[in-house]
Image 1 (cartoon, one colour):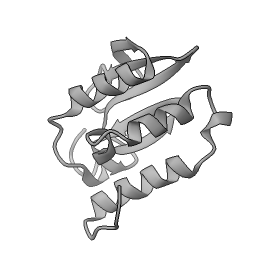
Image 2 (cartoon, one colour; image 1 turned 90 degrees about the horizontal axis):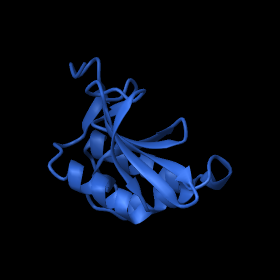
Image 3 (spheres, one colour; image 1 turned 30 degrees about the horizontal axis):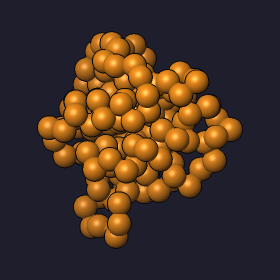
Image 4 (spheres, one colour; image 1 turned 180 degrees about the horizontal axis):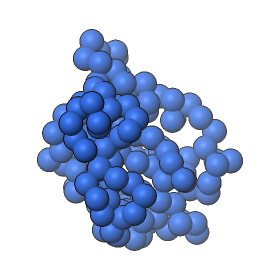
Amino acid sequence: MTGSTEDPALKSVEEAWQDLLGRDLSKSHQGLADLVFEASADPVLLKLFPFTSMHNLCFSKCTKYPYYVLLWITPLGQGDFMVQEPLVPGGWTEGTELHSGSLQDCVRVASNRLANSNNVLHGDAESLGLC
């Protein structure tokens, strides 16, 4: 994302992406750094609030914890990745597999799945009444 904005939700999204891209994630989990870089180039995913948890790249509808997770991508190793959607709306501890495959395929699947997502909301899922 380029340029700052006055909208607090969009500003939080921009700052979260900048933070993730500025970290050395290669030490965290194989494939996570590549995943963040690839996802940040996708215009749909770039509009969502990103965070990492348990070696996953998660995409949230809100900018603060507790998050409302729309889906996440997991590096599986050996260049394979998996896209999952929460079993419980907004959750991220258990998911349903949507796709497994290459990095590019998984980013494309995630982007297509989230193409019609509404704007990110500033705040946490509880105070916004999402859960």
